[in-house]
Image (tube, rainbow, N blue to C red; front, side, top):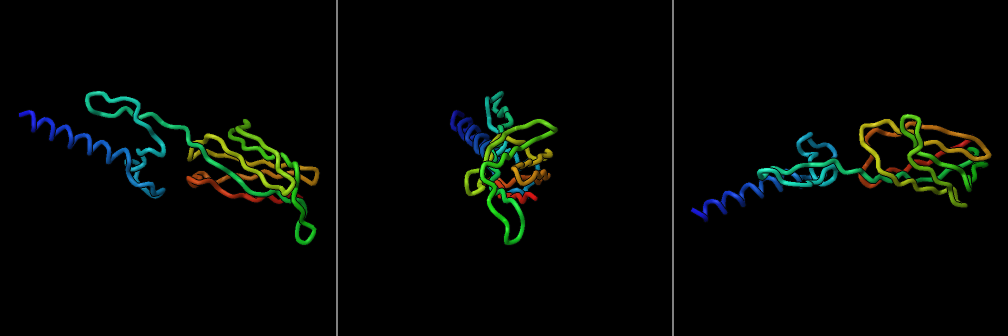
Length: 143
């Protein structure tokens, strides 16, 4: 009798684990998204995991340039900000080569805007709603 209970318990655990740690493919179904990328199990109630949404740490990086064509130069010490619904989530300054990296917790399927400004101009652009897991490179050209 105890062997059957252990076998049944093992089967339930493997079933739960396979749902939570499924494939990491972005083109997967809603049920497949309930994995370690977006959710974590915080507790078990009657053998069912309680899932909690994890903040998603994403990275946006690239370079900011002033001018266009052959007169284009890196915008050193330009201001770069990530905003959502009018509020600033993160802001950084570029280095002397115009490079920047913004890392922050974001939610997929929301609208974000990347704003850059320097003495040579300003720019604001909408970002894709689904960020790749490893981040996205965006170069900004100011005029």
